[in-house]
Amino acid sequence: MATTKSAAKSVKSPAKKTASAAKSKASPKRSAKTDLAPERIDEILRRLAAAYPNAECALHHRNAWELLVATILSAQCTDARVNMVTPELFRKYPTPEAMAQASTTAIEEEIRSTGFYRNKAKSIAGAARRIAYDFKGKVPRTLAELITVPGAARKTASVVLGVAYGLAEGVVVDTHVLRISRRLGLTQATEPKKVEQDLMKILPQDRWIQYSHEIIHHGRQVCIARKPRCVDCTLEDLCYSTDKTWSSVDAEKLR
Image (cartoon, rainbow, N blue to C red):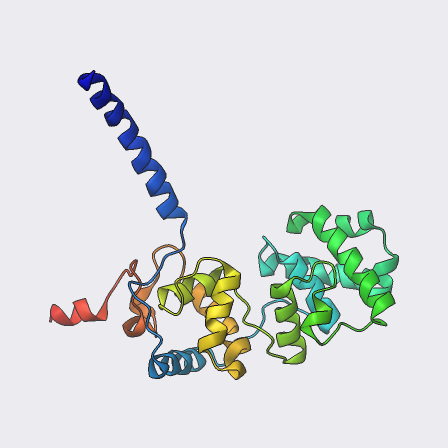
């Protein structure tokens, strides 16, 4: 009997390790510690502003309506692909009223290459009708109203309000903002909603909009998901991430 139990344990052990490894791999990278000292946060914001002085939304748009549609399309899709699709879409349907008259099938054909096009077309059609008929063709300027529009959950609404109207109603948390905010020790949360709540508590409200733009640029250019370019990072000495690829402290010790 002892031999049987021992064998059973030896079989289960690798499975447990595999499951644990998979869970660890799926979790966003985190910092070794959380450091919310006001002077440190101020320095992070100062360096980001200096490194990305012209950071802005990468989605091409001419008004709040076009930005709303582009943001809906950007889910699980690159901004570059969205920017390839929207010019023809807006040429055919330039206003919420025009889009509201289009069939969902017609919209699907225009946005097919963005992925999940059926759900996106349904959201865009619904948004067009809601704005055209209930908001007189104007994209709402308040979060409470905007989140009632199909396809405009809190993240999308915050993008539109921040970029189109300059209204800081929240912090936009995409994959870059979530990953880098954790690496910097500004949050230990893994859910975008909780990460946003943490960031809203520690960042000045007048930096909510620009922080997201700057971090997104930083995440695309330097602090990438795998093998971040720490040697080129303007925030490296302020970062406590457990997956750093280079450390100025270690480099100094070798001198």
